Amino acid sequence: MNIQEKTVTSAHELLAPDSHGKSSVKYILLSLCVICALLVPVVVKDPSHQNLAILILMAAQLGVAWNIVGGYAGQVSLGHVAFYGLGAYTSTLLLTQWGMNAWLAMLCGGILAALISLVIGWSCFRLNGHYFGMATIAVAEIIQIIFTNWEYAGGAVGLTLPMDQQGWSNMIFTDKAPYYYIALGLLLLTLAVNYWIEHSYLGYYFRAIKDEPDAARSLGINLSRYKQIAFAVSSFFTAIGGSLYAQKELYIDPGSVLHTGLSIKMALVSILGGVGTLLGPVIGAGVLTFIEEGTRALFGGSGRGTDLVIYAALIVVIAVYYPTGVMGWIKQFFARRKAVRAQKVQDAQDAQNTTGTQAGKEAA
Image (tube, rainbow, N blue to C red):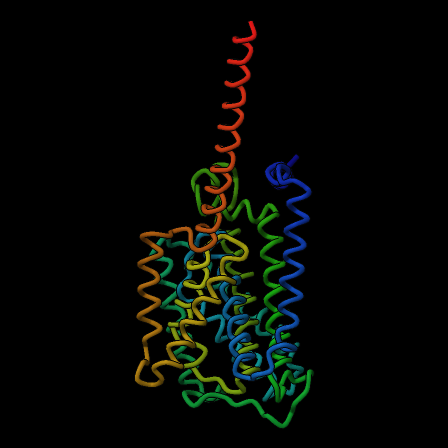
């Protein structure tokens, strides 16, 4: 039996204690959540509210994509916006200059980003810790400078998608509902890939690399190879998210799809919700998007940058009080409740046993 088969066997053994009843409840709740999500455009008719829901889904998808490399593999990339921008520019250029189908252009953008991530990772993964994060920021800044000065890609002016070519083939619509369903489908696909990774040998390799790299290396795990895999998969889905943004907004420029602040938001979505968890980035995206849009609605132009101040405060609070994020806090809450219930049951049993013993002595 090779190491992959042993790892998968161990994974099944670790998952075995979950009862069938608990699994059924989880699947039922998940199905209800998906049904509710599908009904949102039917119930919510206001375009601004639909747009808010789309922004939450898009932020969640980016957070889930970043979580693959930053959460599971523990490689904190702060330049992921480079792949976001590559996806947006690739799909837009293929659609406007070459007349390619929008869905195929989106796929090409993801593949190109994954290939470039292999080149970037080959050099950056020689660095560890904060040096790796600094290197990814530098790469993102270089790519932003390239697109800012590249006339074929619109330079600093940017690119505009033609609004007259509407329809599913070009992924251009007049209302918000189709964009909502595309964003929801992309999020569910990214979550499904995360779930598969989490419960496959890749997930266990990634967590071993994150927690005990030296021990993982001693077991024969090629650290660079699996870091590259995590980076490529994460980059692919990040680029897909960038392509969707371009199709939704119908306009891109270096400032909108290659801004360093987007990388911070991708990481913060996952950190706030809970790094290395499946649904943590989804929760984090909901919180951060409400903060971002709420500050814009309350302060308008005069409050520009308020969301960044709140982001910074959240990072401090999370680092000090909730290092495991919202999902970690939820798990701790239910664990404490379970422990309290178990203690009460144990106390009741001890009291019953004590009463029975005393009654036996009196009868004797």
